[in-house]
Image 1 (tube, rainbow, N blue to C red):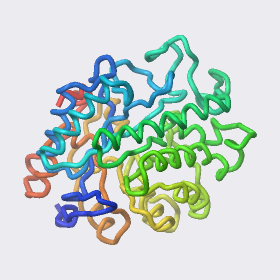
Image 2 (cartoon, rainbow, N blue to C red):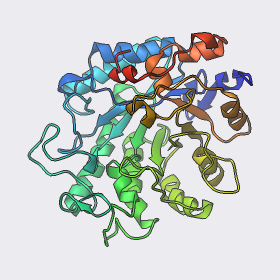
Image 3 (cartoon, rainbow, N blue to C red):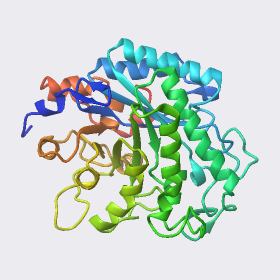
Image 4 (cartoon, rainbow, N blue to C red):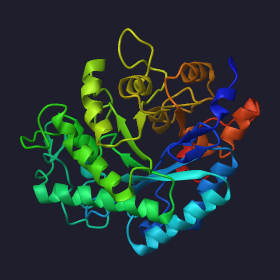
Length: 367
């Protein structure tokens, strides 16, 4: 370990979100909620991470109340009495352990194939019926479809506050519904929801405004976004800082409090001529707090795991340097926390020899 990690364990207070430290559990789909209802095992899973020292939990993606939001009957929903009662129990367990928690509300868009999820007969939803550039799988969403999706996110945010969560994260990354509106490769619309980069933010901005209206000014609203897509790891919406500013400004103005900036590898610079990553540039441009994420604590990205390549424990020196110079406020940890609920306590206490590597078998998501 080349540098002390003490800085990552400073408390943080923002809009009533009082965190014991800067470690955030990043959302990771597990498909462990039969019938779309999170049960006691889900509550215990998140509580273990809080007891292991994690300051903030962002749940696995949980789908909004739209007919084709989900592609998996074992992924939890965020609507209906049974699912929301299950989430209320999750919140109770996390709070009892002294932690904070937000749901990540989600619509899978064209990453869902027709035939999947709770309404298999219905076509999937996307801005232009494209699952990736040039691949048409359906028809463009109508104005009514778009309004229904926006409303579903707003209702989910209201339920998050009512159930007792400490904020809400909107999933706008990785090629799912919101992200397909951002990306020119999948958004060929010529109406108010398409066009140039700024116009393509309209759908997400309307969702942010709906969530803000549903929860009031003091409930933290987080937006997760990415340059890369599951359909194209090399995709980049913004090629320069000025393009990133054009993209982020309408989202910040709509009411995003915190940007969750998804990289596959947090240490990679976003633009030539600077060593700042996406979270660093986003904070510099917007002045808003940011979360960095992407293979924190590991020396291989998540794609390597799907190829059977294990990820070993990485040095934290670069992460701490970037944090201490103010590039980001919070650090999202994914796979390292998946395999080791005690990860945060172990790095805080210097028990580095006890950290667990991430091997292919960890994809069972059983811990």
